[in-house]
Image (cartoon, rainbow, N blue to C red; front, side, top):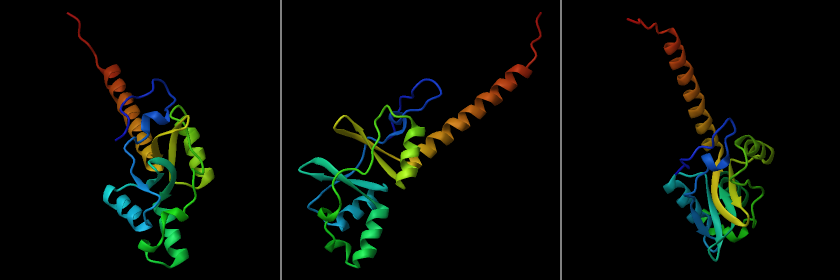
Length: 157
């Protein structure tokens, strides 16, 4: 679920596009469980939890790499073997442009959104691309309506 409140003005914030309905999997589970959750929910990543506290992230890409490197069945690859913490994150008041820079420099597809010490959501490249596309389309529609309005002649009695 995308946030529905838009920040006024030209700067779009992560809180405008982040997904607050992220999926979690316990660190005691296997990679098969995590991949199953990702596939069923059609999401790019799941948050690894340790006693219900967010402690890491597994993306589809990391799952594929782990499977390739170990050559083990997914059910035999423990999530405990994935690193703790988040390689990088953004705050809800960060700009989308800043988050795109983080994604690109860290070569990631998903960023955790952290407010203080609390995980409040995730944002993906696709979330940001979709929102920018929507904004661009709205801008073009507005320009088109403006042109139509300006070209309209009014006959006054």
